Length: 379
Image (cartoon, rainbow, N blue to C red):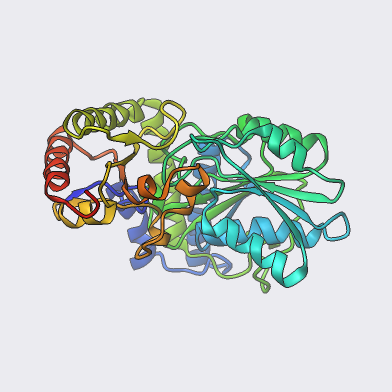
């Protein structure tokens, strides 16, 4: 199969496996132990912390390891909301957030009575900072807006939104799970207080994530117990996966320095050109320029995206977020962008990786084009 679903998950890189293997075999110690085995494990964690920090451009002690990107989102959102309960009860987010962000926001709303404002996006999937500014109230304690959308790849003006929040003493969180390793992501340039990273989106295993916490940002822990991860996230660290994530961040930094994302973008545009020339009326969803270099979301006119992919068994792709798989309703992200139900149902997300080849792109374009010609689901 031709794998074009890297926004759902990525294969584990060989460099990552090499970093993990010793801690699955011989170096199995508990990092809290004081003997040699523990010291080796602890050293691996601190190396990984430094590798993550180097990619993010932050101090190593601002890196908190979690069990997933979803856990990091929950820690950021619930942690800020609960620790700042005396300051206010209002949260601002966007209409195109991942369920890992919308879920904890809705939980706080229904379980504890927090007030939630969901700002809209335009037809390209972009949040207007002015909408955030107008939504801010005296009791606002958190703004959380994703850095890059997982379905259409649109990049958000995070730094501008973060400045609005900082001027008013409001914590700013961004979920950067999709953008890490694909575009440059620096916490100082983005001016955020909290940032989420998910390992399996960048060639590390599933089950490991990071929350960047700016010094001075207070959080109520979700997991209580020992004093691991600066007392913010209790539990014995998953040393093999932490080591793997560190290696993945180092690999991502090398690829960014080598401008590897430009090569991926050229392949993405080659695929778009081939589909557009073969399928009259094909429509791009998302921003034409300010989006992830690997992401192509297009709607096939008069066709159903699920049906097109069913007729293309050689191509592994998606019709939206993996978290929405199996649903027949239009993607909430695409409907939030104002797309008609017909156009939203005709959408297919094709997300490339660093190992995608020209031959695969040409074969995928041919297979999808043939499937569209055969599909009569809504023609």
